[in-house]
Amino acid sequence: MPLVHPRPVGIFPRRLEHYVREEKLMGLEEAGRRMITLPASILHLKYRGLLNAGTFADIVVFDSRGIIDHATFEDPNHYSEGVRYLFVNGKTVVQEGQPTRAFPSRALRRPGYKPGVL
Image (cartoon, rainbow, N blue to C red; front, side, top):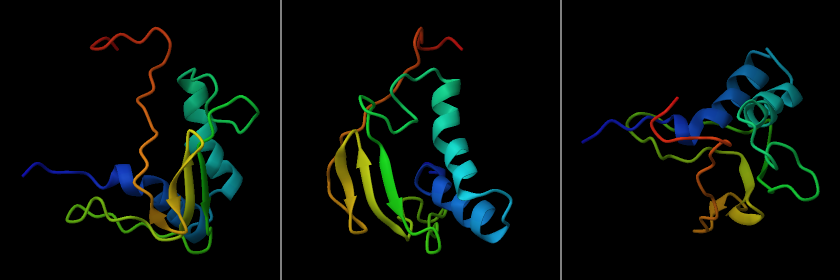
């Protein structure tokens, strides 16, 4: 069985739980910038990373005091605790803490991207 890493499911809740709440190394606003706005800017992804009219709406509503990552190597797809709502491209993906079976996401490529060329 191939090894699956827990990072895709748990990276953002883990950062909020560890670096913001426990270690207090940064505030919630800075963590959000580093997880959302900064990567979109670096990759030159237009209409991503900011919540403005005309942009794609990827929004997470969570409890900053109760967000906990549960993903492990043994159970890499274990959802985090504390995520109340998640909207991807304006569609509800998590509602009241439960997945909705909606899959409105798509792969994003930066301008000029050529597969196999870095």
